Length: 280
Image (cartoon, rainbow, N blue to C red; front, side, top):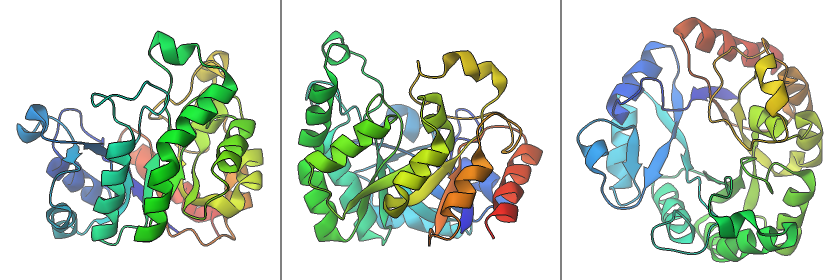
C-alpha cells in the first residue's frame, strides 16, 4: 500500500505549490483534496489548494504527474444533512466528482455528511438523518456503479462516525457494491467509535484510509466532535490505536492511503515510516 498526502501542506498556497512540497518530502501520491463547483477567485489567484469540478480533469492530472505525483482519490466532502440548496455542496457536486474521477481513471471518490450547521439539520432525528443522507446519495451510487467508481463514506459526521449510522446507511441503500468506506483513524476515534472495531466490521467495504493520530488534549472532546481535519503529531505518538487498525486491514488489497497530518517534514516522514513498518 502506498502512503500519500492530503494537499494542505502550506496555508494559502495553490495546488501546484502543495504538489511541489509533497514531492520534496518524498511522497509520490496525493488526494485531489479541495474540490468545488464553478470558479473560485481565491483559487485562481493562487491562495487555495482548490480544484474545480468544472476543470478539465485531464489537465489537473497532467499537473500532478508533471511533478511525479499520482492522484489517488477525488475528495468530495459534502453537506448531506443540510436542506437541499444550490448553495450547498451536495448531490450535484458528488455526481460531478464521480464523472471527474472516472474520466481520468481514479477509482475512488470520498464523501461524507459533515456536522449539521443549520437549526433544521441539528434538529433531525437519527432516522431522519439517515434518510436525508441516503436520499442525496441514491443517484450518485447508481452513477458510481455505471462509471466503475467507488463512492466512499468517511467518518466525518454524526451518522458516519457511528457504527449503527454506517450500518443504517448501507442498509437503507440496499448495500450497493459501488458504496464503500474511507477509513479515517482519527475521525472515527474522535466521534466516539473504536476505530479498530470499525475496521473489523467494515473491512470488506474499506478501500482507502486517511491516517491521523490525536494527542491526549483531544480526549475531553471525544464524542462531541465529528472530524477534526488534520492531526499535528506523528502516527504512533497519540492515543489512537493506529497500529490496531493496520493489523486488521493489512491483509486487504488497499492500493493507496493518505496522511491527514500538518507539521514539519520529520513528522510526515515518521508517519509514513510508521505505516510502512507495520503494513507488512
